Amino acid sequence: MVKKYMGILAKREMFFRFIGASIFLLGLIISITLDIYLRKALLSSIALILIILFLFSFILCLKFELRFIRENYTISSISIVICLIILMTIGFIDSFLKSRDLVFLFISSSNILIIISWHYSLALYKKKKLISIVGYILYSTITTFLRVRKYYSQSGLILSFLPLILITCGVLIILITEIRMKRKGLLNYL
Image (cartoon, rainbow, N blue to C red; front, top):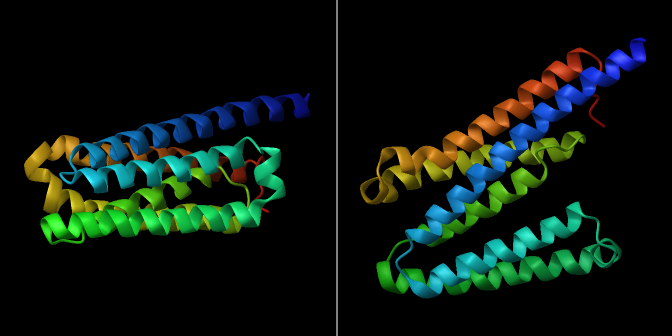
């Protein structure tokens, strides 16, 4: 009877973790869409889209544990990092030549950080959970300054901070649920 009750509690808490991750993903998608939409340089917009597609595709392959990626993890990781560096360099040069600022580097870096943070948001390993939290904090810092400085005048206050608010809600739901699960003995970090 006790095991059945604990199983029901665990399922309910896992549902809340899933809801938190879904809200996190929604905020991530809105953030990326807003960043791409507000870019003025065409080549840097294309570079940003490719950065996001490559990284997101790689992370989805990891989540679905595709055999090729799992067997060639080191080579795949190095290839993705090289592609991201090349795309960030191309986007930065195009953006810098047109607007003389470093915004592209901050936008692409914050999107990379938040995608990695989302990937590890439901991790049960302490190191991966720490990566998720640090990625979220860095994203929040960078995006707050970017949205206040660059996007506020173009898209308004609510739309500028909507992604950050959604991501923060998702992270808080996940963390609060995990704290409750830990107190009930339903979760132990490895």
